[in-house]
Length: 170
Image (cartoon, rainbow, N blue to C red; front, side, top):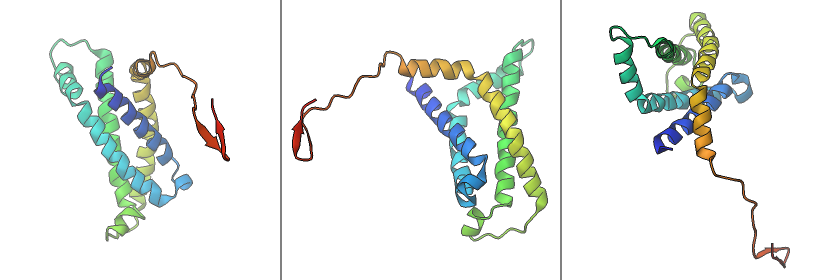
């Protein structure tokens, strides 16, 4: 397995975990929600850069004449929809920020249009993310299998440990 695929998988798992935490800002608090969202945007940019060759190749193939890449075309459009939706989430999140922007010295007027856009695009992201994971499910499963292939859990062997002044050999 390539180091890049392992990196992609670990990054994707981290991104997805952060996404799930962000879906309920009341559980973490607004400050954590906003700062975690900033960090998440950085991981999305890295994800985007790691997949740049795929993006460039698919862009050529999707717009070439006579192409019959129906599944790939759907995946391509879905990925762009997810990206654009992510930008809407971040932009609207910045505009309704109660923690990040004030801590940077910016005060923005409260605007319910931005809040509505943020809630709508966040809910849409759940659908888009679910479809994205579903379309990449085979890659996820095969990559996880490759990472753990041949790695059988071995029992931990402790040799020469002292507990409460007694030497224990195991």
